[in-house]
Image (cartoon, rainbow, N blue to C red):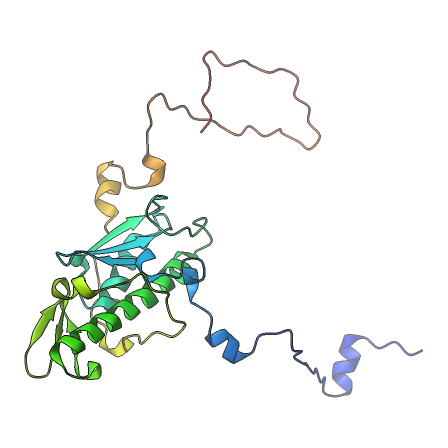
Amino acid sequence: MTVLSRREILKSGALVVAFQFCSSFPSLAQDAKQLSGSLKRSSFLDSWIRIDAGGQITVFTGKSELGQGIKTALIQVAAEELCVTPENIKLITSDTAQTPNEGFTSGSLSMSESGTAILNAAAQTREILLGLAASHMQVPADSLRAVNGAVESPDGRKLRYAELVKDLDLHVEAQPVSKKKNPDTYSVVGTPLQRVDIPGKVSGGAAYVQDMRLPNMVHARVVRPPAVGAVLQTAVRPSKPCRVF
């Protein structure tokens, strides 16, 4: 039997590698039917976007601001697709009573998971608002545009989001495909915006979850042995009871 090294194989000619996709792999058509980001976990639009009777827009995320700047970025994403200014967005983060369960916050996944979910949820919410306005104005929805928290018609008529809320039902499941804005028309995403977490950070205020202080709160430290196989010889009892969180 002749044994050839990889180098000899490459010297002797081209290396051909063939792949065969079996039926167990999802097709592109199947991928297109899947929800984006964390919409897979929480698929109802009102898990991510809510608009009250006064037109206040609240956006929810299960991810935490740990200093990576996601609060600012997520506000920009929602404001862009809903066609409002960032000041019109109230963002609620990591509140287990209100926000969708997105698991942990790590690995630079906040924008790919939560950001993508909010992007699509906001885009679909905007399209629902356009549809409601079209019904009120008796015009085709594709003739309308969303501008500054309102829907405008070609003849100058305008309906604010607050006026459409009474007919708005966002407790509907998100669709796999969203009619998102053309990036060439962006006016919020990609523009400078003061990070909302910076003031507390530079002033010493509470900006992140690690700044939380509870009554009688104590801190623990992981003490690791100097070498593998080390055995504890003496245990020091704390002077006062420790609380475990």
